[in-house]
Length: 280
Image (cartoon, rainbow, N blue to C red; front, side, top):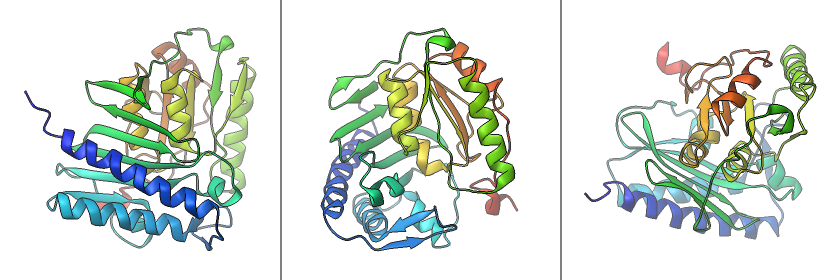
């Protein structure tokens, strides 16, 4: 039976590569940077240009499909996931990295139907690494199959996380407390690429055993969630339940044992959900 969404996935890969060229070109030029919510939450003209490119191209090819885009939501559009085919777009994941020339920057395109993720494309532009995952068909990087680490001992593991874009002291206390507890398990190390999507792709590739974060958005991890699960990994909420795409919280790990061990150390809190306005 033909894959009904293969054409959409092929289009996503082509768009991610085209967008990645824009990002790499922009790295060589002056970038106009604007603030979003805080002095550490940045947006550039490239973010907006890439999202416009993706949405216009998809609208032309798939006129009935819906979108959730980081810059569109920032401009006031609702963040609502329906049963309709929906493209979930982060035009530049790792904008702060991009602005500073730190080489982990990704174009992320997730795709959901009936609220279930069907495929994900994460293009790490500076590295020229194209990560893809298709539900039931595996995960790949530049065409090579991905497989999570087979490590089951948390004390022999590397864990990835980030500090997030908020600087609220109460939130930061929880972030640092969790990091301290994870480090003191002990683990081999704590790492962060500065991009949720790339951190999760590193889990899929077996470079790190787990990643956790609170405060990210659905467009940060929708695409990479498919890649992790198709590489044999597990996804869950930071309090141990099923992953909720709109919750702004995720644990991605190579196995259930390590995911559950990390959950025990997390000082959980609930940011405002991505779909909060839709639930009001």
